[in-house]
Amino acid sequence: MSWDNARRLAADRVRARVLIVYVGGTVGMRRLEEANPASPLANVGAALLAEEIQDFGVEEGIAWTMLGLCDPEGGQVPPVDSSEVGPTHWLWIAQMLERHYGDFDGFVILHGTDTLAYTASALSFLCVNLAKPVVLTGSQLPIFALRSDARQNLLHALLVAGAKATGLPTVPEVTVCFANVLLRGNRARKASTSGWQGFASPNYPALGSLGERIRIHTDLVYPMPASDAAFYVGRALQDQVLDLTLFPGIQASQLRALLRQPDLKGLVLRAYGSGNAPGDPALLDCLGQAVSDGLTILVVTQCSEGRVDLGRYASSRGLLQRQLASGFDLTPEAALTKLMWVLANEKGAEVRAQLQQNQRGEQSYVRHEVRFEAGGEARELWELNGRAAGAVSRRGLEAAMLRLQVEGAENLRVELNERHILQLSDAPGGSVTDVTDGVRRYMVDDRPFHLRIRADQPFRLGQAELLLTAKA
Image 1 (spheres, rainbow, N blue to C red):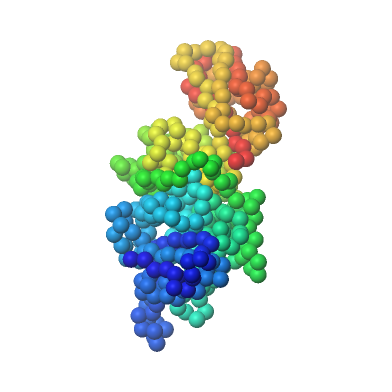
Image 2: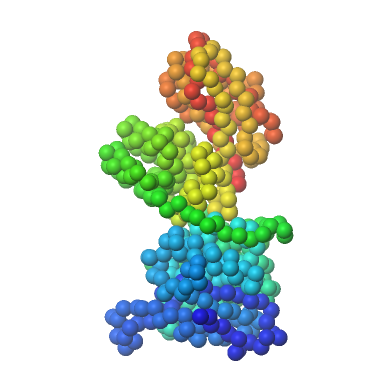
């Protein structure tokens, strides 16, 4: 069943059509006993909610239609508390967008605030070649409450989604519209349990401000896809993943028990600061063994803002040496949903490669891993060639780390493009070394990297990788 504002808006005045998908949440709740302030809130359904907003969009010429969440067969789903929302619902919402994409100019998703940032992030990855606004919003108080923030939030979301009628620039991405700001969906986080400014974007500026005037910062908006690129949505997410926060006193035995789950495919690891972790060899080896066994581990920071910079401190190099992927400045919500999406679509080494690339504006940095092929024999001199999968320039290079796995070598000398960049007096087993200055000085844009590694005696080279971090 659907609801709309057709009786308030003549057909000849329609300038834009917007679909409102009511998933659930506080926005559509009412007290079971209205006269009792202690009475719990309960969803009243879309009909009363639609009646409450009949005038919304009429002045601007926005014709809206409201639908409840539907499953893939078109069956109506009762309003869902946001604490219950998960990957199945994300896929259902995405499929609704796909089914109705040709009939509407924009979309508004009404959602509870607790997991709204997860849903926004998931939709950003699931929607491919999105050329229309998809705006998520909710409220801290029900729309029926006298002091509710719901009316402003919903109206603002409708105006952004109905850009064709309002004259605002089109924002062709998944966004969160809350209070007086428009945020990129996969950069948003819930910042307050009850304040009007319920969401924040700690690592990326707001896409727009909504005050007396609405301003869209077009230089920050994700680019419009090519005109001939067809919109479609992903059909799968890998939900066999975990989200773990490091804490003082964490034991390798605890971690080992967690990672032994037979179906586990991925882990988001919330590390300290810029990607630091305890130096306990047993703990680090437990993570390394899990990666060797096929588990994908994506590292993000526990801090509310900033980024992971694996290798910056010695306490993060253990994670880098064991081939954990860097999440840079991903929010935990974006990290988890991106991990689910990539695991469902990629295999093998491509999983880590794609995790470290910017897919939908969710991160400010990318990493290219230049792998050099080495053999099993022992040599005094290794000459290796490799090329980055993506474009990396000297000007755009932020950091470069050299990851080596050697056996039987001392006094290693490393050259890049026939120029000396590193001397290692002692390099037993594996090492990770910052070579940013040397790489920035001697790399040649758009050319392969030539690496020369020599020692005073023959040695085996198990691994050689340049890890190049650049601005996205």
